[in-house]
Image (cartoon, rainbow, N blue to C red):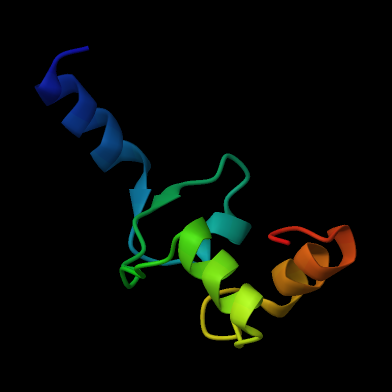
Length: 73
């Protein structure tokens, strides 16, 4: 595919309405703007070793999994 073909394909499948992702049977592509978070495994490991919180870095269910599995120890 050429760049122009890719662009045309994207325009055909792109939506600016997140609800379309659930409403349309074939789905669409939604380009969400998300903040850039400077997170690394090293940072998580360092914080956990120091007993510091990682609540601002990871969702609760991910932190629970890390603790249950004994990761980053």
